Length: 226
Image (tube, rainbow, N blue to C red; front, top):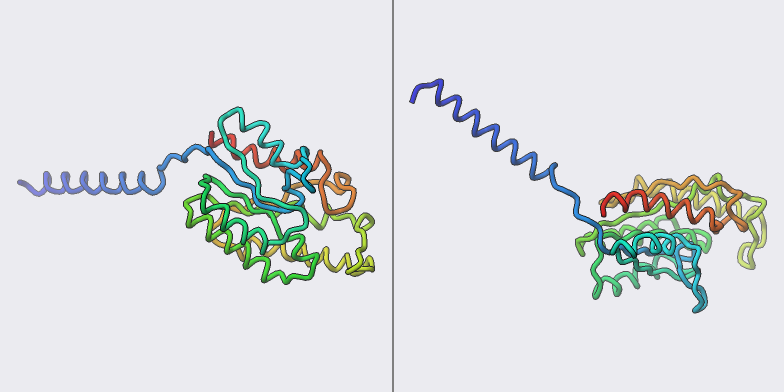
């Protein structure tokens, strides 16, 4: 075999190896989505005190995707924090298989005095658990609290009786939100939703119009995988 032929063959072999290596790692076709779980609190919940809540974003998504053969499940209860979400997600994933799991929490933690670090730690544990079950984890940052949480609408509570105290908690929540991208690893991050402060009555919960913005943002991505 002459040198020219030898170099030609080895070059072709090298190109072939590179091609299939690149195809393996970068050319994978995304698998279609068949089952989705949403984990959260009152913003995500589809019932309250045993009664159905129809205007939250998982219900809007469910109405569109169920006819397309996608199973939508929800693990969310009003007032619950990330520790509850983590504990119940462990049980949920023991007997259920999902392609994607969305986690949207932290506001109840921050507004009840739980540290940012603890809340983020719980979210990371959920992400790690979801990955271990071979599902795609998505962490939702939520609305832009700096714009959405109208301080004139924030209501004091028995544990936080002053407006100044509520504003301080708002700022703590903004800090928590801004820390998600830099702290949470091995997860897809859903960026802040552009929901105006006019779409809330209490500076915490989006109205039906605000919920539609959340749903449409998530649906845009999900529909690309059907």
